[in-house]
Image (cartoon, rainbow over all chains, first blue to last red; front, side):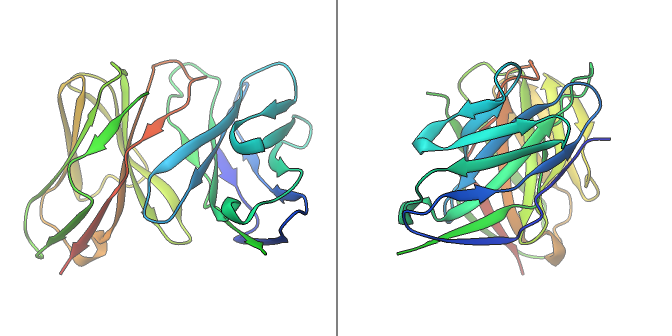
Length: 115
Length: 113
């Protein structure tokens, strides 16, 4: 069975400080991992994905994520937070097995960047 | 750019009504999804479809059905709306490959009174 855990409901960070939003996953086979962001009353926007290769993935708006196979984690990071980064962030996973086409989401982490 | 369009942003329906939520995508994607989003529960998959007339149940299909008569359109149907179906509904589409991201519509906030 596939699953995603986002252990923090809320993350607060001061503007200019680095931020991390945590995600761990469970999946059969090789994982395909995704991060999305949601602004108020909007749909989800794709940020970045890990498919294979380099464990550090770079995405939109200066975000990056680090894939760690041994810890089954895929944490989202940004070196310097902006107030405009305040939003709801979702981690998602697809399994590597044939037929595992579903996209499973975590419960989301609300990021607040404090001016 | 990929565009996924949901027919309504806000919808208010009465208990017992039959409700149709429509979703259209313009990028010839094979996969289409319907999710429900509730605070603290994240996104939960209701149904998904990988081809015309094909559908598979997600985690919470009870009380819902879907229709995919054309590749670009995926409809979610609430057979008899209930107050516990008040929620944000999100439609998404993607290519068939598992390594591709999904693209989301803007969401429909449904209130059942």
